[in-house]
Image (tube, rainbow, N blue to C red; front, side, top):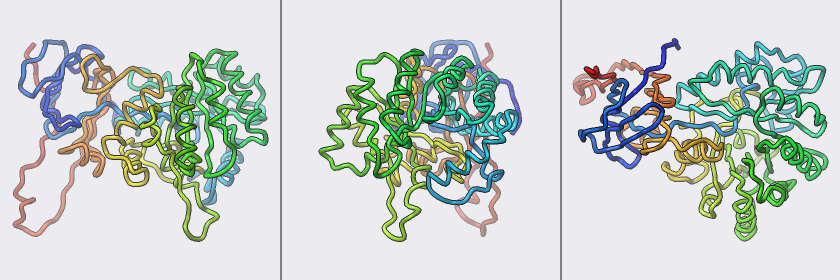
Length: 427
């Protein structure tokens, strides 16, 4: 992976949309100003011309629920495979000796991988630690946000449990954290912890992003959360919500209406929840993912993310929103188009970011993926990608493959696919 300066784009030619239409796109600064059938004249703007023949173009990916401070710590921790409790214990033991620069290095590596896949916006939780210095991770991720300003939007959520004093939350917010977070369903008194987190956010006038109902059975905090924030003016969201997958239709319908009225965005996190569930079962192993298809049909704003990447909570992960989309299709029973919306436009909506994508008037945060269709893009997740952040190319990946095949075959005679090119403008 090498560094290159961003390149401002004025036109994208020959791009395939999710609908299948072949189009040209005009960009003025950070905004898409026109999307027309390929070959149709475009308004003249300043910048280079990018030919994306053979690529599908969508809104850039957004990661609405990450843990960059924990990411890529699996090898250092060597945690036992297991459920949520074992993962928490492993991380807390490691975090007793957390180093700020090492945390920054791991977080940066993960964020840059995300950017290369086409993710231009990340909301990441950061642990408020026990011990003498609770803000090691906070300082590391505030530094990362400043480093990547100009190529990626990063939102930071303070993640603290019931034993973290209010003063530590205040210190984190003073240091640059954007939202209040926590996991009240894990507390001894879930509703008391929920009420405290909401009170902190209200007092500081910031948004909330809570881990909520993260097991197939147990504490019901989402309903109380909805009742408490209905009518509030700050963004609010809830991640995990796997308990909802076990609810009878009538009960889910009632809860979904409460969540819709409260305007809480629900974030499904398939890869981590699939990994953490069912370790105590020897047959009919249970699995659960927030039922965002049914929630969206009920008018709830929904999104999906990858959550953890190679840490005690999930030993795998590719830093790729297309991996999340594929899991939503296979395990969440969403159509590819719905799955892609959850990791692009839906995620941006839940994060409170401007609309992006190949739409006139939208932010020019785009990703081109080598594929003949959206379904093929989700299925094969080609690493050949071109990523635009606010109208500028900030990452390109091209893959070269050589395969020994018996000759002659149709593949051997087929022309090599075109690479994305910048076309001289002559301006």
